[in-house]
Length: 179
Image 1 (cartoon, rainbow, N blue to C red):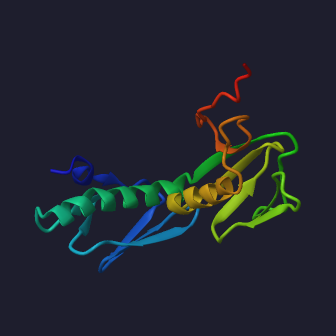
Image 2 (image 1 turned 180 degrees about the vertical axis):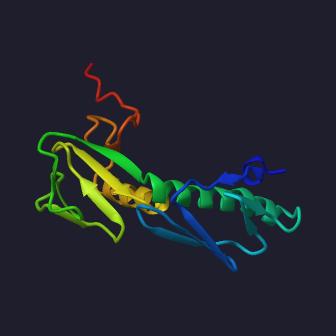
């Protein structure tokens, strides 16, 4: 039995959930998200709770059961609170500048600056030159945009320079040892 899949999802006030066929649409204060469920997974809406059910105990149905429940839960959290990822830039001369809410300019030691444009539903904040906040209602999209930004200059193991997630532990290597 899937412990994640069997847990009912509580729908808070101000959130509207509609189920049509295999598509679940969640509307809240911050926006609207929809998700198409994998084959066989059904969702029932009863008195402010959602219950995700699978048709049988095949291995495919079991694997999609917990996944579907987590995706719906993340949609509800996204339209009520939203998600954010925080990135930290380390290195001399490395900095970020916000060009509005959906554009970012990074100086990462290249001969040119790196311009990043946010997809629809994502916003950038730069509280300091070495800090970037990626915000949005879609957890998957927020994580992907943060990973794409980090990909421009991953933290290197010798000096630790690069873009990293906050509280990410970068294993450092010792440099050349002199005899």
